[in-house]
Image (cartoon, rainbow, N blue to C red; front, side, top):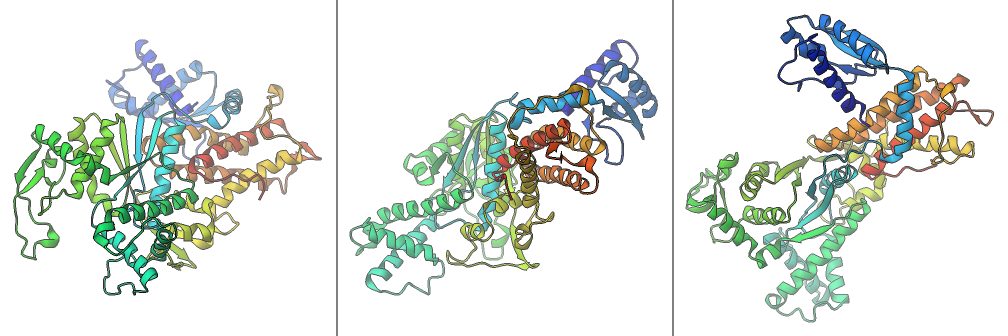
Length: 576
């Protein structure tokens, strides 16, 4: 029910028919044809650029083409009440009230499914968060976690099959350091030995003490005399307990993953070795030298022969090493194996949500997926930029009980889950975000999450005061259907919802959802406020609805707001 895509196809066919009648000439394709919203200061419900597209090939001014098209369009489409020509030749089309009545009827029937488009279905794997399993999540992970979660919600809303995945980096030096940190805390508790102060790389958060206490209290390990003997067991238990903390953090954000894939299992199953062998068979691996990294050029860096992947064949800046000096596999080799694992599970599209520090990693992993899948599997990477916490215009630092960072738990305890999810999505993921504690706790228009929730609560109050169920069906009285200019603006905004969903999904840009909801709520509140001075704008008078049309518009707004807030994982309270 996307009127923009519907009328794109209708007008495209209309132009083809005009060419058959030899009234116009068409170019080889109509890819440049668009159906958009007209500028706010101009009349019309949709705007078409057909006259501009056809001007050159017909050797006429766009305005002359526009006049011809206007005459024929009015004849062809009875739902077009008027067409306004705007310079240099845009056609701004106004629908009649019958059209909008049918539109609202369809929206009422679809309810919260309005905007969904399941015409193209794919199998998606969305990997997000994937923080090292060495402690609870911090604010830096929060934005990417919400971004990944809402991308999956959008894909699912449009009928796709989606798997939400967490890649557990439980192999490598950071895991060894974390396990040693837990061990030192256990010894500190049992033997009263002071936790080392001179080893700066150890994990020092209080959560490490909590994990140590759990291991002791549950008697998960019987003896601690020989660290080498208990390392593997202690590592597995420590990772498990740390992951439980992470899952609690994610759950507090309303996020649950479908699968957890462990890096250690890739090693145990020889998947890294097998992936490199797969690349060798494709003649994409060789022994060679790579130029020293810029950071090491001044440190007597010695070039040496390494096992390299020919990633430059797939658009990367340079070929990438697969083995370290000690012949162990590089982090990149492990990542290739993990993505090969996903390819083998027959997903159509892979999506990785990465932190800001991984932006430089995109070209090489894209190259790897292209090579491993023979360009059959598509990989899309979304980078989640940094978040700055502000209070009274200054950088804000909360408690650091969990370590040298602000945790997700701290943030949610401070402001609640709804503001966190809404505000983290309020700007494009590729720009830095300011999270202002003062604004997200205000009950004003400046707090967008409050403003949208208040819109829904106000609508609920209308139906509650009329003793009506918001979900109860209402049928149009066709003779009494009439909309004023304010209602028309709201209905036009409602018509944009499927387009917003479509663009948000195709481009994986969920920030468009809260922006749209705020704009819709603003139109609603503005209309509501008109009723303070003019009874004709009110929804209720003498305990009765002022018009059936108004109630229907309110229901339609409520369905869209509810649907949008569900997509971004934010509540819609009935009362505020």
